[in-house]
Image (cartoon, rainbow, N blue to C red; front, top):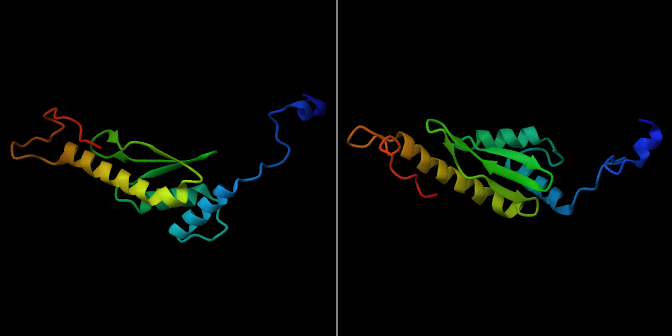
Length: 132
């Protein structure tokens, strides 16, 4: 491939795309929430904060248009529903979304691990999945 072909490739970006304003607002919120420097843009630091500061060990994935939040519940092979947020929604909905995931994981964990008086869990008895 020659330089001329590179220049004509419409998928080749010769400069970084400008970030939308909502992206910056989301990063300011996340950095404040996890006590990180204002100019931080490292996904790994936010991922660590989300995992470390939730009881369920939630995860976050960064996407071009926002983030995804979720968690897998140990001892059940199940997980909470994945919640998708756009960059614009992050400052308003991030904390409530994490709380929703925590609540779901708590219900799933109890369903799979809390032993009833008969010595079995709801999961072992084949009882319905907890309402999320």
